[in-house]
Image 1 (tube, rainbow, N blue to C red):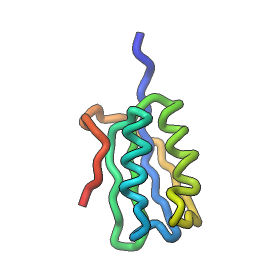
Image 2: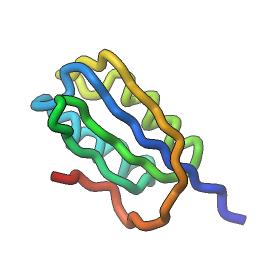
Image 3: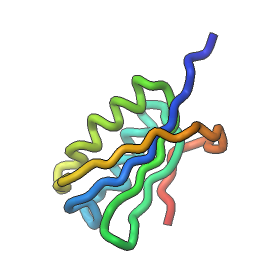
Length: 94
């Protein structure tokens, strides 16, 4: 029986734009087998929507607390949401 999928939306605050955060997030998420997206928001935050197994989503969340080497994460906001099953890959949205 396949494992249940979960979905979480994250808002990452700090020095998270212009430091390769989105590209690093895509690499990590794809390696973990997650689907969803990452995008910059006009207020300087980064939004991440990830769907996958609870373990994989939690591993991404653990990584989001610090992000890539040039980033500085000051705050990570998490919201549990319903998985849509609409994503087939993890991508950057513009």
